[in-house]
Image (cartoon, rainbow, N blue to C red; front, side):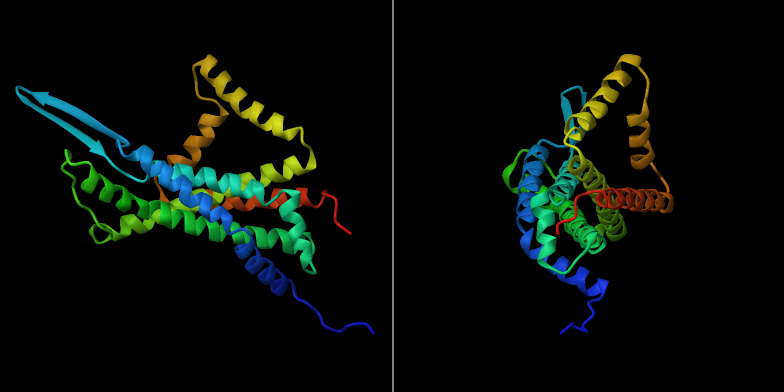
Amino acid sequence: MMSLTKVSLTDVVKKQYVYKLKAYSQVFMSLIFLQLLAIFFSLNGVGGMFSSGGSIEVQVKYFSADYVAAFTMLWGFITAILITTKAYLNDDFLFVTNRVSSNLSNVVFLLTASGIGGITAMLSSYLLKAIVYYFISDLSLKSTTVLDAPLEMLMGIFSTILYVFLFCALGYLVGMLVQISKAFTVLLPAAFFGGLILDGLNGKSGVIAYVFAFFFTESSLVLFMVKIIVTAVLVFSGAIVLSNRMEVRA
């Protein structure tokens, strides 16, 4: 007897999303490891200045979550690649599903991961300062809390989440390209590093430097949001279109 029960796309995406939160929980362990590693690299400061006058010498060091944010973006990129592998994609077919629901659940999962990564990355600056304060005794540390600049902290968290999500989108696209052809595992790194080398030889900014400046030097918050969101949507859309070319499991 034919079942008359209809499963909506939203229900399937929700079930896949919940499943992936549990199945991919190990990626959050790797997030913790990378952020702790970034904090370790930040213990000497991420910048500073030195001045002297007569018998007085003053050294100023800046401690921030910049390294942690960078490591978190790298984590988002790698995580997105991992969930496009066949081992992960095959998990989707534990459910009644298609490529659309599979990709949508992946995007929602990556958005959640970006939120967790962005929040923990920015809050790690307080852990970093606590370590410096209690274990590096020769420094006089200016104490700051969330209450000192709440708007600045919220903007930092929001910006970091968007950056991580953008890197997730790039990783997702790269992962789909690799699934289509293993040649991209060589072509993509070669194109990236080749572009950097050519820019260095020419002594002027190239495409990679332009792209970096386009996303990381925007002063307007609204334009920054538009750039990141539109780009992420386009990149994810491209990856989803590419996924339709992949062999569908029977």
